[in-house]
Amino acid sequence: MFTGLIREIATVKSFVGSTLAIASKHKAGLGDSIAINGACLTVVKVHSDGFSVELSPESQKLLAIENYKNEVHIEPAMMMGDRFEGHIVQGHIDTIGKIKDIKENGNSFDVYISVDKKFIPYIVPKGSITIDGVSLTVNDVFNDSFRLTIIPHTMKETLFKNYKKGSRVNIETDMFARYIEHILSNKNSSKSLTWDDIDSISARY
Image 1: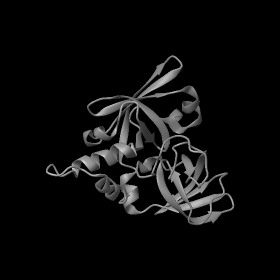
Image 2 (image 1 turned 135 degrees about the vertical axis):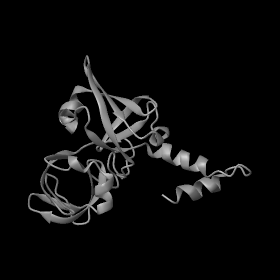
Image 3 (image 1 turned 120 degrees about the vertical axis):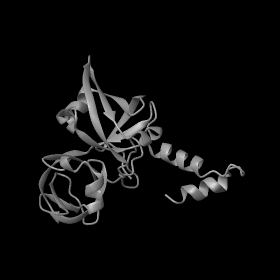
Image 4 (image 1 turned 30 degrees about the horizontal axis):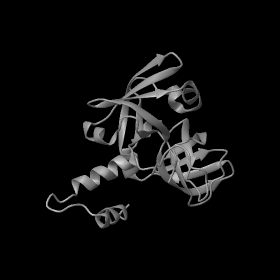
C-alpha cells in the first residue's frame, strides 16, 4: 500500500527488455515493493546507487511506458507504523489519461486530463486520484475528462513541471469508488445486501 506522496524523483539508468534500472537515494531491499510513476513494482536487484525492477509485457502494455526514462516518481511501500498521509493507493494503474490542457490560474495551475468514459464513474468530485503516483484531489468531473488544481510547490517538485498538452500519464482511480461500484454491480436485486455480503466482497481484495 502507498499514500501517493512522492518520496523522490529518481533517475532512470537504463530500460532494457523488461528490466528498469533506477539510480536513487532510497536504499531498496531485494523484494521490496516500490511505486514507480504510480505502478507497484518489485525490486529484483540492488545496486550501490539504486535498484532494478522488472516490468512484465502486461505492465509495459498498460502503462504510459514512454515516461519511464530520464526521471521518475518513486514511493516505497508503507511500513507498519508509518504516518498515514495522502490517500490509500494500491499501485494498480487503472488506465492512461491524456493531458488536454494546463492553465495557469493565479497561484495555481488547472490541469485537465481526458480518460476513457468507462472510468469516469470512479472519478469523484472532491475525491482522490493518483496521477503518475501523485495523490491529488479532483475538482471537477466532465463527460470524458476531469480537472485538477496543482499548487506551485507540487508543480515544481514533481514531474508535472515537464507535462504538456498531449502528455500521457498513469491513473489510479479512487479505491473506494471502485469497491462501491463492484458491490452495486454484484448486488442481487431480489436480495438485500447484508454486512456478511460486504465482508465477503472486501475479503477478495
